Every structure is written in structure tokens, then in C-alpha cells.
Image 1 (spheres, rainbow, N blue to C red):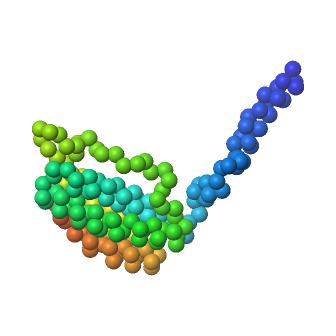
Image 2: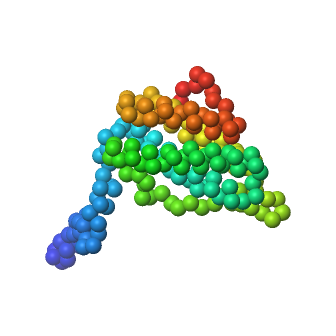
Image 3: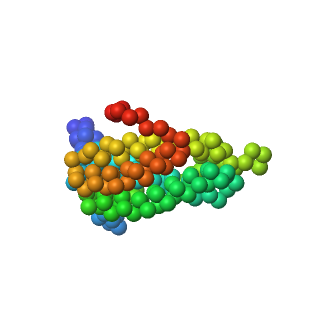
Length: 184
């Protein structure tokens, strides 16, 4: 009976230890992706992850908008987004690598078209929903750029201050209004 109890107590320990080892054929890079050691503070880390994720998604959505029956104003907005963030994505990836932040994040799901933007043979593309989406997302991106523009890292601060006017322009083009004096 005691031998059985010892075996039952040791079984979870063996399972836990064996799950922590690297198995044959598993890439060594996996351990790097799970490592949280970066050369940037939490604010900078969140900036990289969120700004990059939103930029990638917005560029893919903008390309879709340009290929459907959206209005000229909506296509113009999508073009501005595609130009701005299409240029910014590789810059963010290069800058993030200098701070040891892995971009693109391997856990980000692929692009999927939101159902409320879908083209319908009766109503066409929902321009208002897209504009509202852009305004909301640009507001979030703008908030991250504003925060990083005051970061302790001179590199991040300089990058954010360089890109901030273009982000504000796209936000205003989508109908967004900045609240002056508001601190988040």
C-alpha cells in the first residue's frame, strides 16, 4: 500500500518536470519568446505591442476598404492609414528589436473582417461604421503615442514626437477631437 501511495505522489512531480524540458525538434527560439527580459519599461513595452498590433490590423482593414465599394472620403481615409502605418510597421519592428521586444507578437490572431463593415448587395459598404472604428482606434493609438512622447527613453520619446503629428492628422481626418489638458 505504501509503495502505491509513493508512486501516486511522485507521478505529478515527474509530469511537471518533464513538461519543462525542451523536446527534440522544438526550436530553441521558443524559450526566447517566453522571456520577459526587455530593455524598455512597461509603458514602452505596451506601446510596442499595442501600437504594432493596431497598425498591422488597420493597414489590412484599410486595404480591404480600398478594394470595396466605399465612398471616396472613406477610401481617402483608408489610404492615409495605409500610408502612415504601412511605413511605421517596419520602423516599430526595428526599434522594438533594439529594446529586445519581439514583434510581430507570435500570439496575435490573423486578420478577420468585422461583420459590421461587410459589403452587402443591398446597402453597400458601411462607411459610417468604418469611420467610427477608425476614430476609436486612432484615439487609442494617439493616447499611446502621447504617453511615450513623455517616456524616459530618449529613443522612444524622439520616435513618438516625430510620428505624433501624422497620427494626430489621421485622428482628425476621422473626425476625432483631442481633449487638451486631459491626462490619462
